[in-house]
Length: 84
Image (tube, rainbow, N blue to C red; front, top):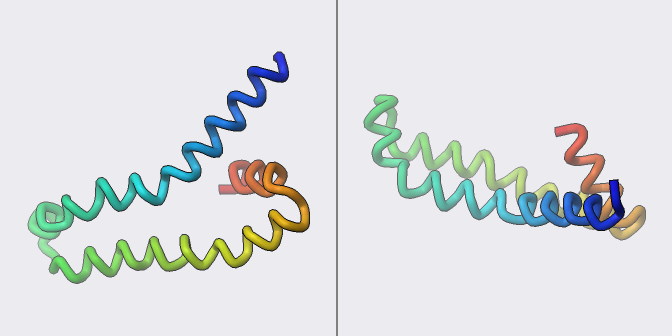
């Protein structure tokens, strides 16, 4: 595999990683009332599910940031992709 192809795959993976948080909010928030009706639960319960996702997502930056500073971004991203 050529190095250009490998770099393209890494770049694509980084773009997807950056978009995941925004995609989940964009898809989830507008559908909360419909999901609450379908599942027979309150809207506030589904909002709590979103908070349960976003809080660890935000807090993880406190771990990944210093690790990226120490070891570089690429090894941390590849480790995260391999073990999630």
